[in-house]
Length: 355
Image (cartoon, rainbow, N blue to C red; front, side, top):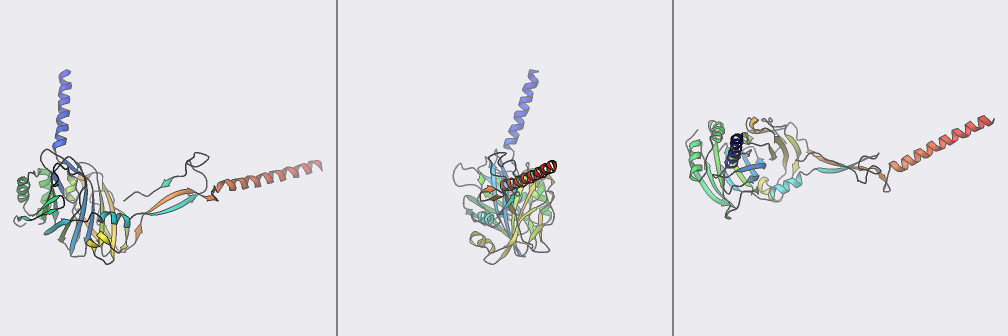
């Protein structure tokens, strides 16, 4: 029995050790490959896609966890891409533009949080909140913020494997398999080496946004590599185009939810991406409870009509008159009328008896 317990403990320890050193793939629009002996996972990706019918530009921001100090980020694209650092103010601006409208609605009779049931002040009901030719090799390298960005475009997975190994990374077999459909479509790769200049700094929390630009006659957001994620994923996608856009399918996730749709006039960081003229903005949220079911990339198309939409968050309040809950004087008046009616009936009954 003692030997069995020891063997079980050793097996559990081995399992935990493997889980700590194996990389975690959790990036919808690409894949993160950490250096040896470390792990990294993308808890959420937020992206802005600008498409004018000919050129597509994606600004991405990742929220990551783990203990990696270096990582390679791989993204398949339909054609030759350029990479540059994005404006950190872009996503706060978009959050402000798409924030829900807040409304107050009243109710008459007291609820569980109201007097006389408790001293509470009411409840709140809110709507849920709201990526074959021959190998090319490294075609560019620049320092973008904390990141040393090496752009690799290749239609040969072995060229990508060679580049990763020369930079201290290992291309896992599963990732190589998932890249094959892109090879068959003659797509290229963008490989970015993420290595903060500050010694010992981990890739943790919200990373600086990156902007990737490439030619494309259709609006596509690469998602296939999310199949490798081990935990449920969520995607926040802003789409800037001439019309309201929608995913052609759910690609194996929950039904996409539009949280905002409307024409906006870009300013500040948003104008750097979309220009100064009016543009239609569609905000989409989607959950992927079982990433392994993801069956392809998101392809977005224009809807039949550019119907505007904004989420509404309701704050429920009890109806008051002069600061007093309306049900109190109403109830008092009703009781008064009822009392007067009862008194009147009693008087009539007395008169009949006395008569």
